[in-house]
Image (cartoon, rainbow, N blue to C red; front, side, top):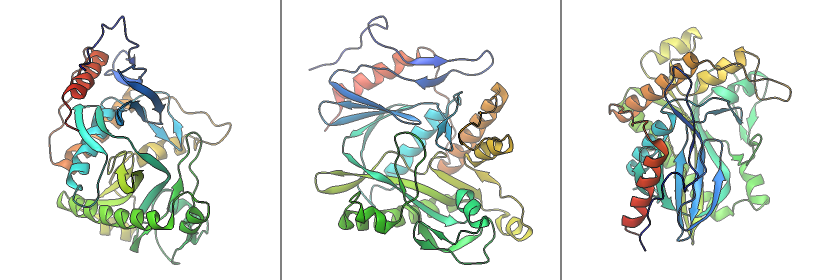
Length: 338
């Protein structure tokens, strides 16, 4: 069976948002692909399930912080996320199997559908971000992992620590320990041991690849699922949304002086929100996101892409964005070798 792209008047198109002085952003999607059986709208990605056990994952330009989707999109963010994820999934396929089959569009990945575990495997090499905020408040145990006394912000842990969270459809993800995950039946002990082993090996590879580019992979998260009896890596890895990077040059000097680290991540977005009184708590209002701010965030995402991949970023065309995505996905479905 060959799939044809209907005219735009016949399909439910992608919703776009375009401020006067800013590039087009893809904030919401509502496609109806042939054989489609369902759709899941995540904080950033929209995932379409197809009848023959395929997923079409569209990386939108939405941005979230403190588990809240912010009101404006970031130009080219979806393209950055999708292309970085594809780069690292390919580079780590010798460590563990993953879901990816094809990248038919700069903002789209197509892969195998599996049953995802309701747990995110967060691994931290350095004390920073939310872990530091809890540590500074006196916490010395995180997700069942004991933390040593006397550490400074941005200091390296003696060994990377794994601090899982439950994966929430809405609202805040919650910290959880290895023991609680197994006791609650979220993941079997056997599968958790596989996830833990993959997590450490993926983080080690990501650390090595970052070091080659003059960066430090500070912390990141991985998601896994089950395909038959096999645990596989799903979603994305080592992007600015799931990972934090420091510049290696000057790290030790800044640490010794107690100065903020130069970093490539969306932590600066979180800090921008914190400085304006927003941490995702009830009753707080998201501050105004100007076009200039959104463009500065876009530039940071593009900078990270070029640093971590060593490749120049080529902005995809904005004309007929919804048509482009639809045609590319249908062409992929017609030619995919599976």
